[in-house]
Length: 354
Ligand SMILES: *Cc1c(COP(=O)(O)O)cnc(C)c1O
Image: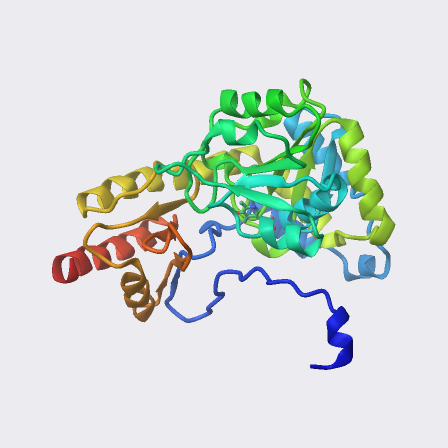
């Protein structure tokens, strides 16, 4: 131990899903989209002149902010963008959770929330989901320093109704309520429509899942102008040039193509519903997912063993060795062909090992 180590900020880092890169693998472990981004994205990528890279990008990201504002019927002052929604969420934690009171989020949810809370020294209190992995609204009625809910939740896929979100907002007028809608385009009802009514609501979305652009790192937050202004103040105070030029240009292209967005999210939803039926036939049990993944368990099979067996076959899913969920696998919805390969493996596995 060096003496200086006493003064190092020690955090337990977030551990992302593996990023294997093997020929012939089926990658269903990090909720990426199996379809390419909108065709306009590829076209624009070819057309970006490298000469433009000499110059700094627009710090206000105005083209992307405007495209998102237009798409969602908001004013540009109601839109904040960042380098993936992870950046946006971290910025929101830093900006809004300074009361010293605990921030509330579920015990089973996106595992970055407690990492940021630790990093920024924000106290937090995890609220246990019920036995069906649903939030208990009344858990969020007590005194707190802010609330963060992923809706639909990860890794369960369970969606909370708009009336549930509304009730939580009504009970918490004095703190910021963040709704992380990383998966909202696959089902569930967005809280965007509540923005005019609640000055304390921040809705966060990402291009990583429904818009097939995880590699580009684009996220956004929506709220009333005062909230957005505070976020921008914090962002500009330490890094104004957060989004690169390519992300801005390509992000706009993705937002513009509504037809393609509908088509690909629709395909994923259809595949998900079909896979739900097939998994049920094999005896798997899971909460009713409204996202691009299914969080499944099987009464006769150990999730960890199945996880390893799938990996042998180069089929990657996500396993969380955590209390309450260590007998579940989170399976991202891929193409129909990918899911058929998964299902035929599972059928054999259940028959021989179950
Ligand atoms: C994937 C995900 C994010 C982060 O996505 P980015 O790639 O950083 O935009 C945020 N919240 C949840 C719940 C997610 O699943």
